[in-house]
Length: 366
Image 1 (cartoon, rainbow, N blue to C red):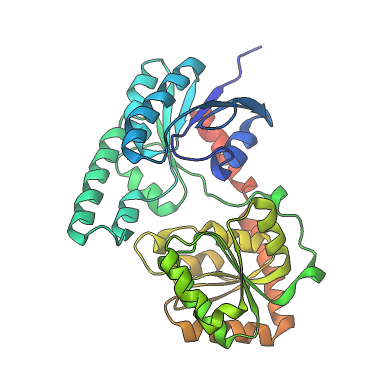
Image 2: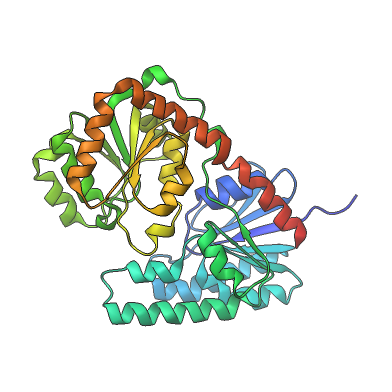
């Protein structure tokens, strides 16, 4: 009987139980392969057929993490002697040569378009942003050429990597079908609207909250404000009376919020990275049976074209957001039909199960 392929996921940044790393990639492959995950600051254990390897590390201080934590990841990884190592953080690219010298295949899973993300960081001066983005792009290009393959989450990122590597796989970050059972439509309240995820100015949270002043509904917010002053500003508005702020909540609580909402908002600002991103929350709204109000980006329109489950708005126009929300609330039957169409769209095109075969074949091809 031949030995099972041993796959090891490495991260120096992500938390134990990361949705993409553990729940999607590791668990879905554990029936066919021997799967390991190396992650800092948790408990070494076997869970759902996946071997978790932990170590204590300082992950908040970037300088310490880039040096010492990455070295500790390498030390644990070498003891596992995997056939394939999957790197989930750019800072881990520097240890790829040492892993390859053990005879292993090494792949990079790029969760984000990092050069464009750097250009979105408004706290960095514009001239420095361009310089840092260019420097990172050169660093990344130099290292990925030596790898055995690359995985990423959007066609745009894959196209960029394909210019410097011949083996690139698109494995999109769609929700897991089993996490989203068929909605109980009778539990849906037409006047419950939700926004799930990071509560940042660039993700349109100010416009979303202010729009609620003109909407006869309640907005459920779940996530963390990156800027306490923005939260304080919004709490002082009349619109905040229509907001239920849940704060940072777990997967179970998110499921509960989504099960009661009929409309989900994903009104990100038109930054370089957001315009080409696949926002996880949009697909989770589809999975939970929520009609979608999204930014009017060409990519978002193409993803939901013909599905009859979404309206598109200028994410920086508070009045337009309010108008569309009020129109949806004023026509409950049509909005519920959109919510059911959203669930159908998810089942047909956007569940994680549609990505599993691609990932499985990618590993075997190595």
